[in-house]
Length: 225
Image (cartoon, rainbow, N blue to C red; front, side, top):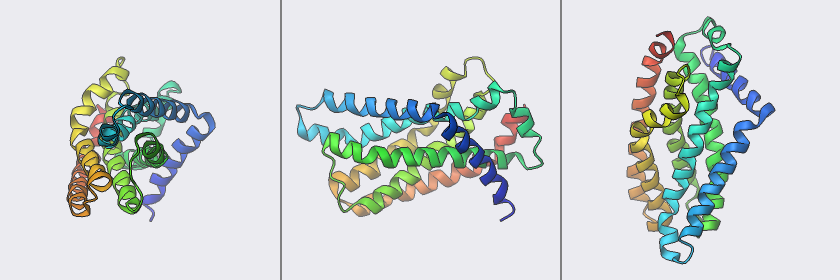
């Protein structure tokens, strides 16, 4: 329990900071909603195609919004030159990463839960009866995305071209997470195949565990170099 306390403190600091400014919330909600609206409008004349692309549209909107959220998670410390002070906390470097990760994951998971009913309405996505597994898919998918986004945001935080480098570096790594999340969502909403969805969810769990162990183990090298 004592090891969890600093992680919760760091995550709480980031979430309170966002609640006060709401800068990232406004930007990500607006960007995700516009992405879904434009994609739905582009294929609105084809009902079957509209439903087919719904899972991909949902995760595309979440991925773009997640990049904005991750980039801003280190921006406040950078603007106030307080990241070095954060590194002076008498806790392992991995604790800093896990605290930032927890804040990013909670934020992205809430955004995903808000975007799911919007996607269901705009794209005619049948979600009734699949809510428990759909929520599990959103939690596992956003966790995998947050694991990679938080790590690469720290890696590029002190670079001059960090806004352009972050998506270039992280998207090739996050592709397996996004593909598995889209397939699991599609299996639940379009095919109604829970066994197939369970296979993709097991793959998501595997990816999440690998990225969690790897990113936590090597995070200290990204902030000490």
